[in-house]
Image (cartoon, rainbow, N blue to C red; front, side):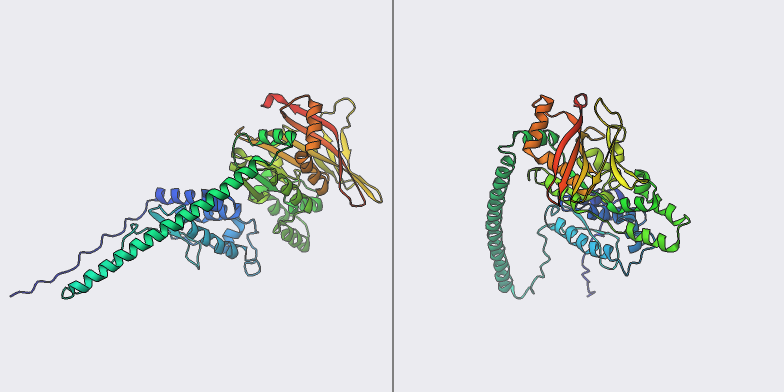
Length: 443
């Protein structure tokens, strides 16, 4: 009798995801809260994801990512600067966390294997699918007992998971209730503060607090050459420096300064003050000037900390503001330019210092964002402490109430404010309102 061979049915080959499926998944993951709160990881994921979609076989090198995502020079030494490798480790963790939590329903998943930076996509196995090896047919009772044991185990696991889920849900609801109560009481007893920040947050958009890049400010001071927003974004200013007649050592020094995001304490302090006024129920994102994007400035509420030298994004509002922080190279001192002085106002206000005191000036601009889908605040000063004083003005019930009374209104219009700040022997500032502009027609 001829023998009959029983060949197992071959598994169907995995259907390869389309280009559009992969692109949509990359953008969906990048938009998740795991990444939206970290601008550099968000940009890192989008960059390697989009590069892999252009050419799946092409390698993505560490130095390329350092230059394109983290603002390093194209020739920087990766053995001395491990910023890409450090962030890649965190990136892999967040991708894994996404697919284990919010993305647990995703049929298509990806990871970035160690040793490279190219996302690898594959289909997730159907939920609950188990490949059980059947016992030999001459042990039916043992097979039945084994199946019953597994069924009982699954029931216990299901009940255990359900109890855990209920416990977690209770904790989450409790924390949410506390957060809502805290948010509701953030401005209790501060009617002027509540009026201003309630208006600022009325679009319910995410708020981006953008810290200054004082590295570019130092470079401007050394080169005596202003840097435009376009040159800052595409790093043209560094290419101009490298092609200039500066000495090799000076070029190397400027390159080192560019590769470090210097920051003053006053800028950080201003960010802390602003963050304290944004209730936890509103989404906020603390980021750096060099990691900020045009999409964000058009979409979100924004707080730009620093003047145009340290935060080139301020240039977006050049044609809308009257008070502008600037620097006098000839006399080596900062000042505020008043573009259209009114009666009793000066055309410029220069910072000054004596033995134990310092006088500075702060500028605040409250305007709609470029697309009018959110609001914008610019906080700048003739030094970092004056910048911090600008933030303090917007968080002070006394200052805002006095300003609101000056305007004779219950609701704040869009406005600009010029403050004179003073400090004695390193003690805190006093801020005096010396000029302002209002723009009620912008609302």
